[in-house]
Length: 216
Ligand code: HEM
Image 1 (cartoon, rainbow, N blue to C red):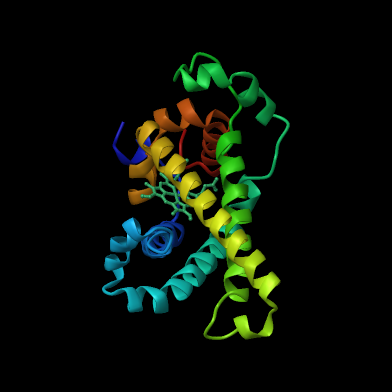
Image 2 (image 1 turned 135 degrees about the vertical axis):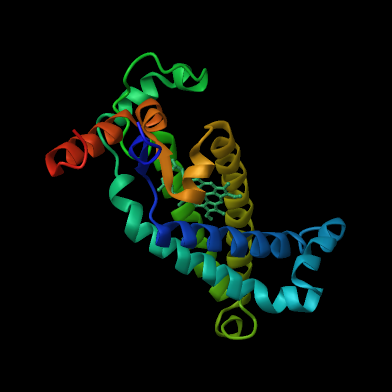
């Protein structure tokens, strides 16, 4: 079997480009944001040059992450809707965590855990956007009362820390499931990987290939 016929396209170029642009902007927004939490974290603003640059660019980087995630939402929401078969994944969570793949779990393009992460990321970025706009001193903060600003700052901090923790978990799982990072880099995964981790999705792709005559 040639290398090409052994591979399945998992993530298109525009989606991969968007994902990695989000990673860059998120890293810079998160490190600059963390630099304001404690004096011992202040060195983290150095990724954007100076503390002044970090102060200026942080909101724009956050908006860039939001815009990128809007694109990913439109592209991926249909694969992240809850399905009855997600219950099978939850019922077999022990086997999943033990990395056992002895029974078919009817997993679609994304598993139930990835779906939860997807919605948590989307929820957190929405809170960050709204609270961030309210507390943005250069443009909007003057239109809000002090109590509203305090609530916005609290919500922004909680959602920011929450999103950073979610992304740490996301990176850990991406490394743990070998082959998924190269899938997000090249766009392709092997058929064996697809069958092992996303059996229903692999079966759907292969059925489509057979009806289109791409693969016998
Ligand atoms: C170094 C950092 C990161 C790595 C290594 C990474 C890795 C990955 C990989 C491998 C996938 C594809 C999973 C699959 O095909 O099953 C993915 C999907 C995704 N990533 Fe990341 N990621 C990183 C950072 C981020 C950040 C910062 C965000 C958003 C703030 C993000 C949001 C997403 C989303 C929304 C998906 C689609 C998942 C779905 O639709 O359920 N990632 N990531």
